[in-house]
Amino acid sequence: MLSPEERFLPLGRTYFGDEDDPATECHCNLWDWDQLRLIKIKGTSKFFPPEDDAQTSIFAQYLDYLSPEVREITIDNDGLLTGIPTDPDVDETEFTAYMPCSLCNHLANSPTICFSQLREIDRLGPGVDLLSYNDQKVIFKFNPLRLPHKLNSSWREMNIISKLPSHPNLVPFDNLILEDNESRIIGFTTKYIPGGTLSDPNKPFRFEWLQQLTQLVDFLNFELGIMHQDIAPRNLLMDPETEEILLFNFDCAAGGQRGLLKGQDDVTGIVFTLHEIITNDPQIKKIPHWKRKIHMVQNIEWTCNRELDCDVSKFRQFLNDWITNRSNGSMERYLNAPKRITWPAFQDPPDFDVPFQFGKNAAGEAVFRSGERYRSSALKNGQYCFQWQRPPQRRRPGVPL
Image (cartoon, rainbow, N blue to C red; front, side, top):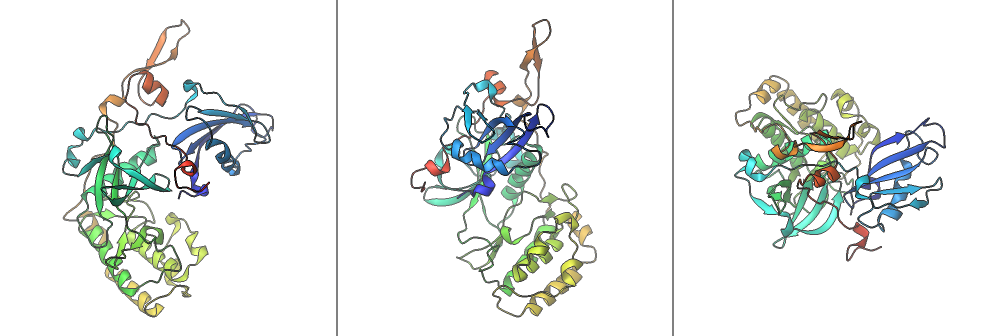
């Protein structure tokens, strides 16, 4: 189930005056990952003080019972509703255009399935659902938001996942997901692996899983030219059928020089991951990726707080030997990987950049522009808009209120 902490994403505030003045009008755009819709909340600076998003959770009590047509609410300084307009023109949801499958020649060999064939089971996180079709469970990853970093990471992960070869330590790709009207690609599915991730400190950890993880990273880096860049316990599963470790989530991955991030190489990722798994040290986990250095954990004592199948020293010795073997020429091998995975840069579909009316000039004549627009403008212009909005999770059959 989607946690309350993950449900809301603030998408900007506007203060119409001095933001430190409690009486200043404030507009806050809030994305709801549960219902997959944007709501504008109007209030004052007293209720929306600068640099404080703590109040966003209060809106769950309203949003779960508002009509789907509501795009804006007004509240008083106590957080009570005072206005609920339903004018579609107040909708500030950005129009997200999806590429038709027919224009993605590089994905032509990927299996596909229509969205209407999927049945919802659960909502696991922002842009991650558990679904089923033909009596099999799958994980559906999607991006409904027109934010540059989300558009690019979604496009990158879809292309990498769909091109990865079958491997015993990778969560298998399943299908590209097409919306039903125009066969546009709106996401992808992978096989569902039950049991949870290794972020659970109560899960035992085996020495052979460290061996599998290092071998997998060598394969990704030196054969495919892929740097995962987000190796962490939350992205590692244990397959209950094979009892092997599985890596997933490639939304931060790089291909060659493209997308490489400072401090997020996979060697550093494994070192910090193993330390976190064994010690569950909350302080080390707080260090941002871009500030991480291997010596920060290599040069300290590791206190074991996890069930292991051998002594900590065996894990550390293996890890140190692997790091030493990778110390010379690894970047050159990575950049010259023989089976490098490639994909085209993200771009909007050709029909995205069509002119639309954007107000009027001083003479009262219509002014047109192209490019980014609100969904309401796209609909008026006759453009196809996939409707992500759905009922709240708590009102689905079988979900306790």
